[in-house]
Image (cartoon, rainbow, N blue to C red):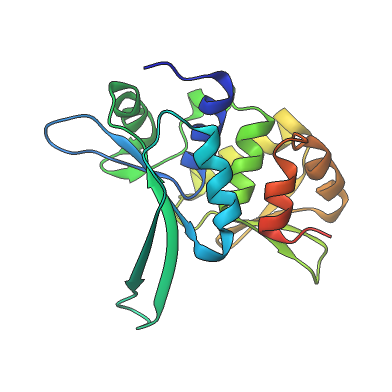
Length: 192
């Protein structure tokens, strides 16, 4: 299977964010991606960029057992391929997703933008972005913090289950995002 450089970065960013890989027995893995239905434009951006690796977009409605609320999502799955199985073994240990340190050096601005697009929110009160990292342990959170600082010059702190981009680094975050991706991220997060 051929994967372009852009597609690889979108996949990496998705795996840092909301994307997940399944691991059937037997067979190969695939990337599963779900977004809130209100973020359909963002899901469509990813869907288009990942063609022909992906199957069609679909809508999914489910009821959260914990809250009892009903949610509407839009998403897609990729084809199953050895490529995704290899990524599974990099990103997962004991069926739990982690940040593979070896991959961080390969991630560029597109991966960062997709990661922020998946798990980020714009905090109007502080005028910056916070990124949810609740599924990651402290080691992984520290790796992400170091990656942001060393690769992009973005200062951030860890506060509970979020990474907060320091207000003074917010312009650097925005300037780092590629122009062809920024409109989707901006619309998704509601940047000013």
